[in-house]
Image (tube, rainbow, N blue to C red; front, side):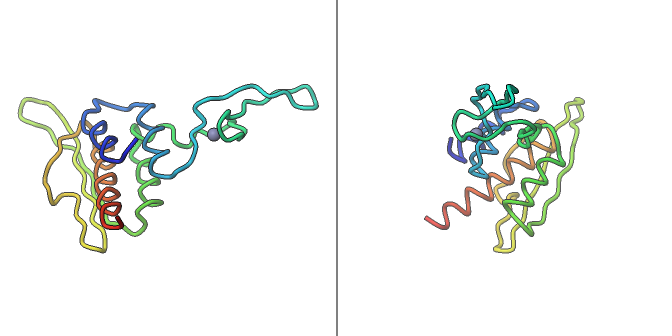
Length: 144
Ligand SMILES: [Zn+2]
């Protein structure tokens, strides 16, 4: 899944989404999220759940989980892939009572996710993930 495709999905998301958690995590970190697992029997007759694709023991390995639900989880990922960036996030509400999220990421090289002033997100967390994806898309384009 490409970063622009993920950005479109974040823009369309109406709340936390576990599939989106996985897809963003894999695209941004290049780490396996262990989608397909199988039981493997150990010498002591116990068994463990192992990833079919990378062979990892998947016990407790769902660090990608909750990415679209948690501001803290999103910020931890952003700190990893965009170290030293400045960010802000907040919520707003319209006069009709509908609430949404907004966020901004600014990088040292002058990138500002707010420059296009586009996007309306359901939650601050989704807005922050969208800003992260915009920053990574720009970086990808610059290095091509
Ligand atoms: Zn795996």
